[in-house]
Length: 228
Image (cartoon, rainbow, N blue to C red):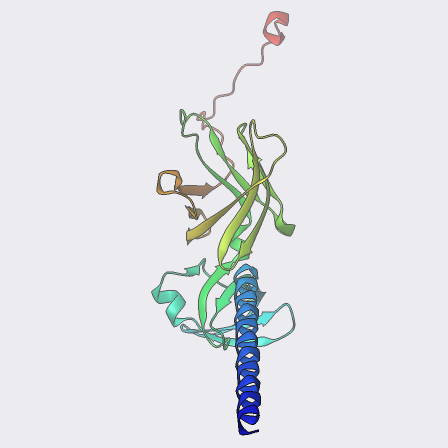
Protein backbone atom coordinates (compact mmCIF):
# COMPACT_ATOMS: atom_id res chain seq x y z
CA UNK A 1 0.00 0.00 0.00
CA UNK A 2 2.79 2.37 0.89
CA UNK A 3 4.43 1.65 -2.47
CA UNK A 4 1.24 2.53 -4.30
CA UNK A 5 0.94 5.84 -2.43
CA UNK A 6 4.58 6.66 -3.19
CA UNK A 7 4.11 5.91 -6.90
CA UNK A 8 0.98 8.07 -7.04
CA UNK A 9 2.76 11.02 -5.44
CA UNK A 10 5.74 10.63 -7.77
CA UNK A 11 3.53 10.53 -10.86
CA UNK A 12 1.59 13.58 -9.69
CA UNK A 13 4.87 15.45 -9.11
CA UNK A 14 6.09 14.54 -12.60
CA UNK A 15 2.84 15.75 -14.16
CA UNK A 16 3.09 19.07 -12.29
CA UNK A 17 6.67 19.55 -13.44
CA UNK A 18 5.65 18.71 -16.99
CA UNK A 19 2.82 21.23 -16.90
CA UNK A 20 5.07 23.81 -15.35
CA UNK A 21 7.65 23.29 -18.09
CA UNK A 22 4.94 23.59 -20.71
CA UNK A 23 3.70 26.83 -19.18
CA UNK A 24 7.28 28.09 -19.03
CA UNK A 25 7.86 27.34 -22.70
CA UNK A 26 4.52 28.89 -23.60
CA UNK A 27 5.42 32.03 -21.66
CA UNK A 28 8.75 32.17 -23.46
CA UNK A 29 6.98 31.82 -26.82
CA UNK A 30 4.50 34.56 -25.88
CA UNK A 31 7.35 36.81 -24.74
CA UNK A 32 9.23 36.18 -27.99
CA UNK A 33 6.09 37.00 -29.97
CA UNK A 34 5.64 40.27 -28.13
CA UNK A 35 9.29 41.18 -28.67
CA UNK A 36 9.10 40.37 -32.36
CA UNK A 37 5.95 42.47 -32.75
CA UNK A 38 7.52 45.26 -30.72
CA UNK A 39 10.42 45.44 -33.15
CA UNK A 40 8.16 45.98 -36.17
CA UNK A 41 5.91 48.52 -34.47
CA UNK A 42 6.57 52.20 -35.07
CA UNK A 43 7.37 53.90 -31.76
CA UNK A 44 7.63 57.35 -33.29
CA UNK A 45 5.50 60.04 -31.65
CA UNK A 46 3.99 62.67 -33.93
CA UNK A 47 2.75 66.07 -32.92
CA UNK A 48 3.32 69.81 -32.80
CA UNK A 49 5.84 71.82 -30.86
CA UNK A 50 3.73 73.45 -28.17
CA UNK A 51 6.46 75.40 -26.38
CA UNK A 52 10.21 75.66 -25.87
CA UNK A 53 10.58 76.42 -22.13
CA UNK A 54 14.39 76.26 -22.21
CA UNK A 55 17.34 75.15 -24.32
CA UNK A 56 17.06 71.67 -22.83
CA UNK A 57 13.31 71.17 -22.84
CA UNK A 58 10.57 70.82 -25.41
CA UNK A 59 6.81 70.54 -25.05
CA UNK A 60 5.09 68.41 -27.66
CA UNK A 61 1.34 68.18 -28.23
CA UNK A 62 0.93 64.71 -29.68
CA UNK A 63 -1.62 63.67 -32.31
CA UNK A 64 -3.48 61.81 -29.56
CA UNK A 65 -3.93 65.02 -27.57
CA UNK A 66 -1.30 64.45 -24.86
CA UNK A 67 1.15 67.17 -23.89
CA UNK A 68 4.65 65.88 -23.13
CA UNK A 69 7.45 67.83 -21.46
CA UNK A 70 10.59 66.27 -22.91
CA UNK A 71 14.22 66.69 -21.90
CA UNK A 72 16.19 67.05 -25.17
CA UNK A 73 19.69 67.04 -23.67
CA UNK A 74 20.58 63.57 -24.96
CA UNK A 75 19.21 64.32 -28.43
CA UNK A 76 21.36 67.45 -28.61
CA UNK A 77 24.48 65.64 -27.39
CA UNK A 78 24.00 62.84 -29.95
CA UNK A 79 23.27 65.30 -32.77
CA UNK A 80 19.76 63.98 -33.11
CA UNK A 81 18.03 67.35 -32.99
CA UNK A 82 17.37 67.35 -36.72
CA UNK A 83 16.31 70.81 -37.79
CA UNK A 84 15.87 74.01 -35.84
CA UNK A 85 12.46 74.09 -34.16
CA UNK A 86 9.83 76.75 -33.69
CA UNK A 87 6.50 76.65 -31.90
CA UNK A 88 3.91 75.13 -34.20
CA UNK A 89 6.34 72.98 -36.20
CA UNK A 90 5.28 69.40 -36.86
CA UNK A 91 7.67 66.92 -35.27
CA UNK A 92 8.52 63.22 -35.28
CA UNK A 93 9.99 62.28 -31.90
CA UNK A 94 11.63 59.20 -30.41
CA UNK A 95 11.51 59.01 -26.60
CA UNK A 96 12.48 56.81 -23.69
CA UNK A 97 9.88 54.38 -22.31
CA UNK A 98 8.62 56.87 -19.74
CA UNK A 99 8.22 59.56 -22.41
CA UNK A 100 10.18 62.05 -20.34
CA UNK A 101 13.24 62.29 -22.58
CA UNK A 102 13.57 62.78 -26.33
CA UNK A 103 16.32 60.73 -27.95
CA UNK A 104 15.64 62.08 -31.45
CA UNK A 105 13.61 64.98 -32.83
CA UNK A 106 12.92 65.47 -36.54
CA UNK A 107 11.34 68.65 -37.85
CA UNK A 108 8.90 67.40 -40.49
CA UNK A 109 8.28 70.95 -41.76
CA UNK A 110 11.94 71.20 -42.79
CA UNK A 111 12.01 67.70 -44.23
CA UNK A 112 9.26 68.51 -46.72
CA UNK A 113 10.29 70.01 -50.05
CA UNK A 114 12.46 69.50 -53.12
CA UNK A 115 15.97 68.21 -52.46
CA UNK A 116 18.58 68.05 -55.23
CA UNK A 117 22.24 67.25 -55.86
CA UNK A 118 24.47 67.33 -58.96
CA UNK A 119 23.98 64.27 -61.16
CA UNK A 120 26.79 61.84 -60.15
CA UNK A 121 27.21 60.79 -63.80
CA UNK A 122 28.26 64.13 -65.24
CA UNK A 123 27.25 66.87 -62.81
CA UNK A 124 25.53 68.82 -65.56
CA UNK A 125 22.00 68.44 -64.18
CA UNK A 126 20.40 68.29 -60.76
CA UNK A 127 18.55 65.21 -59.61
CA UNK A 128 16.85 64.43 -56.34
CA UNK A 129 13.74 63.67 -54.35
CA UNK A 130 10.55 65.59 -53.65
CA UNK A 131 9.17 64.88 -50.15
CA UNK A 132 5.53 65.88 -49.95
CA UNK A 133 2.83 65.92 -47.28
CA UNK A 134 0.79 62.78 -46.87
CA UNK A 135 3.74 60.43 -47.29
CA UNK A 136 4.13 61.03 -51.03
CA UNK A 137 7.60 60.99 -52.59
CA UNK A 138 8.54 61.84 -56.18
CA UNK A 139 11.70 61.73 -58.25
CA UNK A 140 13.27 64.91 -59.61
CA UNK A 141 14.84 64.52 -63.07
CA UNK A 142 15.65 60.85 -62.46
CA UNK A 143 15.08 58.15 -65.06
CA UNK A 144 16.51 55.11 -63.28
CA UNK A 145 14.47 55.33 -60.07
CA UNK A 146 10.93 56.43 -59.25
CA UNK A 147 10.25 57.39 -55.64
CA UNK A 148 6.77 56.49 -54.38
CA UNK A 149 6.30 56.98 -50.63
CA UNK A 150 8.14 58.05 -47.49
CA UNK A 151 7.63 57.98 -43.73
CA UNK A 152 9.55 58.19 -40.48
CA UNK A 153 9.76 54.71 -38.91
CA UNK A 154 11.35 54.45 -35.47
CA UNK A 155 13.42 57.54 -36.15
CA UNK A 156 14.61 56.37 -39.58
CA UNK A 157 13.59 57.70 -42.98
CA UNK A 158 11.82 54.95 -44.94
CA UNK A 159 11.49 55.43 -48.71
CA UNK A 160 9.81 53.10 -51.20
CA UNK A 161 10.73 53.26 -54.87
CA UNK A 162 10.72 51.40 -58.16
CA UNK A 163 13.98 50.96 -60.04
CA UNK A 164 14.36 50.90 -63.79
CA UNK A 165 14.09 47.33 -65.08
CA UNK A 166 12.51 46.12 -61.87
CA UNK A 167 8.99 45.96 -63.19
CA UNK A 168 6.38 47.19 -60.74
CA UNK A 169 8.08 45.66 -57.69
CA UNK A 170 8.55 48.23 -54.94
CA UNK A 171 11.82 48.46 -53.05
CA UNK A 172 11.95 49.74 -49.47
CA UNK A 173 15.09 51.34 -48.09
CA UNK A 174 15.89 52.85 -44.71
CA UNK A 175 18.10 55.85 -44.05
CA UNK A 176 19.66 57.43 -40.99
CA UNK A 177 19.21 61.21 -41.18
CA UNK A 178 22.57 62.79 -40.35
CA UNK A 179 21.76 66.45 -40.95
CA UNK A 180 18.65 68.51 -41.57
CA UNK A 181 18.42 72.27 -41.90
CA UNK A 182 16.52 74.82 -43.96
CA UNK A 183 18.83 74.22 -46.93
CA UNK A 184 20.61 70.88 -46.29
CA UNK A 185 19.51 67.24 -46.03
CA UNK A 186 22.04 64.44 -45.52
CA UNK A 187 21.10 60.82 -44.97
CA UNK A 188 22.88 57.48 -45.07
CA UNK A 189 21.62 54.04 -46.08
CA UNK A 190 21.32 51.46 -43.31
CA UNK A 191 20.63 47.75 -43.21
CA UNK A 192 22.61 46.99 -46.38
CA UNK A 193 25.97 45.39 -47.11
CA UNK A 194 28.88 47.77 -46.61
CA UNK A 195 29.63 47.97 -50.33
CA UNK A 196 26.05 49.16 -50.97
CA UNK A 197 26.01 51.87 -48.30
CA UNK A 198 26.00 55.44 -49.48
CA UNK A 199 25.60 58.91 -48.02
CA UNK A 200 23.38 61.27 -49.98
CA UNK A 201 23.90 65.00 -49.56
CA UNK A 202 21.11 67.23 -50.86
CA UNK A 203 20.53 70.95 -51.06
CA UNK A 204 17.08 72.48 -51.10
CA UNK A 205 16.05 73.32 -54.64
CA UNK A 206 15.81 77.03 -55.30
CA UNK A 207 14.96 78.76 -58.53
CA UNK A 208 18.18 79.99 -60.07
CA UNK A 209 18.39 83.76 -60.64
CA UNK A 210 18.28 84.96 -64.21
CA UNK A 211 21.62 86.15 -65.60
CA UNK A 212 22.36 89.84 -65.12
CA UNK A 213 22.71 91.38 -68.58
CA UNK A 214 23.63 94.80 -67.12
CA UNK A 215 20.66 96.49 -68.74
CA UNK A 216 21.13 94.87 -72.13
CA UNK A 217 18.18 93.23 -73.83
CA UNK A 218 18.36 90.28 -76.16
CA UNK A 219 17.12 91.13 -79.62
CA UNK A 220 13.93 89.45 -80.67
CA UNK A 221 14.45 87.81 -84.04
CA UNK A 222 11.60 88.15 -86.47
CA UNK A 223 13.28 85.98 -89.04
CA UNK A 224 11.07 82.98 -89.84
CA UNK A 225 14.16 80.79 -89.88
CA UNK A 226 15.02 81.76 -86.29
CA UNK A 227 11.52 80.87 -85.17
CA UNK A 228 11.84 77.30 -86.44
